[in-house]
Length: 255
Image (cartoon, rainbow, N blue to C red; front, side):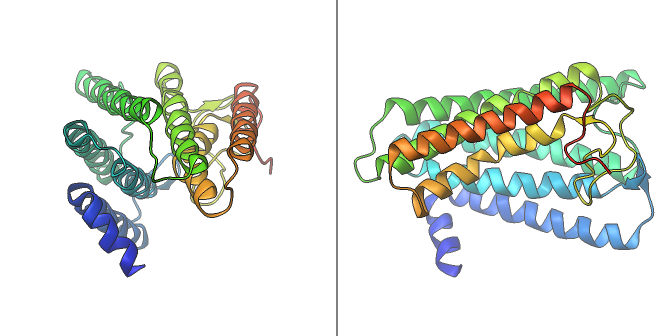
């Protein structure tokens, strides 16, 4: 593990340290969950920022690792700062609103809240579009030092991340993530995914974390490009079916 972090720092020191800042944020949220009773939609207010801090760590360190294969320092530097600025704004605002016992997403109860929600959407759109550009660079460049299966794992991981990141726009347009019931209520542990109605967050989560899963599978376990393609296709189909299930108002697991 020590060697991993040393290599990660060598690949992109800027994103290496930003990831650790978010680890600290996640640990702070864990402490606050144990010591505060503030709730939003029936669960501890700091569960949501905890999830966003951890998600930010995952995407930050993943992209830091992958981008080291690109021999294009200027786009990588710009992307690193776009990631830091856009995601810092999001996790800061989510944490601030949690501390106030208020919703961050879908909150248009005042002109200020509506403006901040719109700015969050703009920030994530900018970040996602830049991620799409980095994905494009992986598609148009060759990587002779890497196995082709691993390259395709990275390419498809980024592609799926972008596609299902933009699913968040549907939630933003609906001003909710639940289909067939109000947001909140009984949900699965930690994720709080609804067990009574459809929940758009599930496909959003599964699709975006292809960014980690597909490259890991193609690096450690699958060295055949065709097999990587088949696994990726199945992954996309399953995620799409989960998305459709949510649109139909059906929970992933009904309790």
